[in-house]
Length: 383
Image (tube, rainbow, N blue to C red; front, side, top):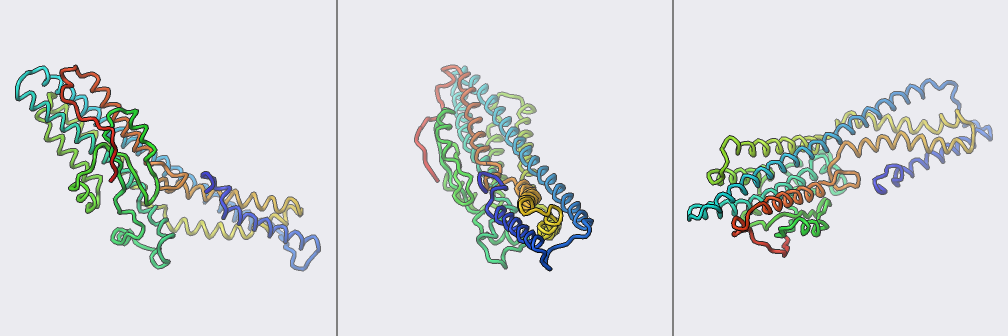
């Protein structure tokens, strides 16, 4: 695709040129009064076929746009809920740290340090959850089937969902690479944003902090990696709940927002994994091919012009075929293609938002409350 355009795609232009060439050839037969010149006594059959094809293509485009918009909606919902949960955690934790810093006791100091260390782990796990969620959506079952056409033999290209789960020929289940950053400032994160990659195989995501060997081992074996990281976050929240100076019913709001974010993720995953119905797509393709073969004949009989016939055939084919190709682009909104939603960009924006929230809350702490801040390290490491 040339910058996301379906009109300038090489295969579409080539087929449209074939239509134009066929129209020119047929018009020549008409001009020389050949016995093979096309004749169309009545245009009813072509009109009937055109109505059916036009309705089917527009209906598919409408469904495709619905899938695309639903995917964007659920993505925004997912990240907004996770950002809300992170903001609430930071607010509750910073208030608790501020109150603990005002109590010059050994128990208060221990409580302060526990909260501070928990925030460091939550920073890491939130960014990691976002990266893994983006990677999972990019490598949905629908996109895996498209990649399968390029890397697998014909016998492997028609498969049930359970078969692509057990045999990974596309490399979708491999772990992505992570660029670990310890930079505290949001500006430092923006400087490393060029590390973001939305490629199929060479995936690279920015996360806060390094992954431990145990984390890597667990995630490599896990089937649902996003849920595993969510479990780690819930564990951290439960572990720190007794140290948070906020009433438990109010703390429960954090769990609700995390749950809402996971709901948005599952709704987006539904679109990434469930393809457009195959029988409809197959039937529409057959109708389009039949209609395209009739275009030069109909245009020649209708225009009877050596100049207008090729032009009209070219434009009519590009129009009806291009609308169908647009629908195909919209049906599968996730992946590495030009027109696909850039999930890597969503991820880096989420990490930047979390960092800005963290910076804002740290700025509100008194100097005494910042006596034991998390370590700052501008170095980056890659896994």
